[in-house]
Image 1 (cartoon, helix red, strand yellow):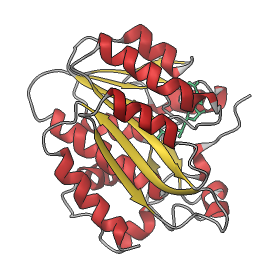
Image 2 (image 1 turned 90 degrees about the vertical axis):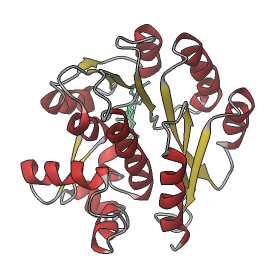
Image 3 (image 1 turned 45 degrees about the vertical axis):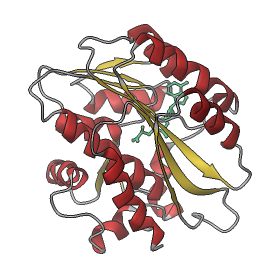
Length: 258
Ligand SMILES: C[S@@+](CC[C@H](N)C(=O)[O-])C[C@H]1O[C@@H](n2cnc3c(N)ncnc32)[C@H](O)[C@@H]1O
């Protein structure tokens, strides 16, 4: 039984880190006039309402994207702000795009998207906004293993699990190794939490050993609530697009001030 609902966390500091890098990569990759594939193993519902009870209950968006906008953390031409502007224009000032709608902003008609979301309610909500993509109501890793190598071969896979199933930490290095073997040109981006109990560390060590050339971007932040176990956000990117390293360092500096 899946209980994680991203609506409580949408627009938090981890989303800001992940979505800023995702938007930057998609902007970069879609500047070339060559079609690409965009895949997501854990898509979520695609569109969030930051004035809803879930966001109000945790206050995470207030400390995240809403603060970032008020304090001009990003330059006005940053790809995440461009995607956010379009979503707010279409859905109102409290709308926030999940990763699928950030991707929708950049993808062109010739691009090919596959999104997996297993939770029935989240999948139903995703179907309302995800018409641009092939939608899969199945385990995201099974979808990625079946679709890779995708057509077109150029492209990006985002892996953004809720880590509800603790076995995810053990399974991810093996899943990524298999996908990378089949799709050696794909940009493979994994989001992971930085946790006080260091549960993510063995997974990260295994990934670093298997893929020493991958880019790691990590940022720290105060816990959302006293005693909350997440104290930062990480992105592991295999085959990072040129320039991502510089963009990551820019984003990391923003968090260093917190
Ligand atoms: C962190 S959220 C995704 C957020 C989204 N990527 C974004 O940035 O907007 C993780 C999602 O994975 C879904 N999920 C959990 N287990 C899954 C699985 N095995 N396969 C596919 N989706 C799963 C959850 O229902 C949840 O919506």
